[in-house]
Image 1 (spheres, rainbow, N blue to C red):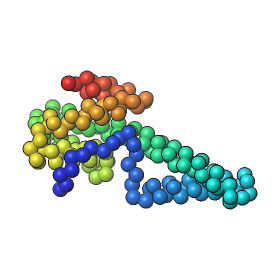
Image 2: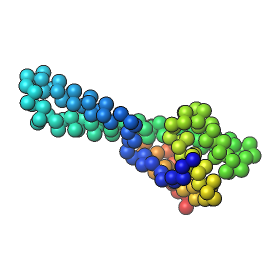
Image 3: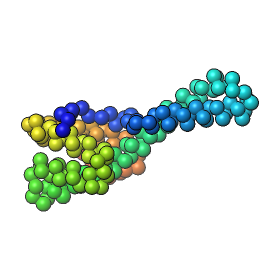
Length: 164
């Protein structure tokens, strides 16, 4: 078990292995097709490469937006799972441990909230109190509040962001 307690940045897309190269190849192919069909010259690739770079960053931005929407869904499910465990009589620490198992069943081991629950579990194993481990919820709430279509999550995020 790793003891890295560094949190990921949810404002940017975390590229998986090979995904960045595949996206770059897609952008290069798009630039090549534009140069060939509109200019009938592959020398036009040089000035059109700016279009490819812009397309690459646009795809990264769209993937980041999609990731944040998925994070909002998983965050809502996580909060509901913790709430259910607390109502069932679990302690707060055990509620988060159970939430990690629930998130792993629903979203797989690579899910956003599974990774967050792993960080909380690591913090608890090295005797960091739960209150210190869940301060990320406030920052996560600021990320989720920017999403336009999840009203329930926005309300939860607003409440969490107001915690002092």
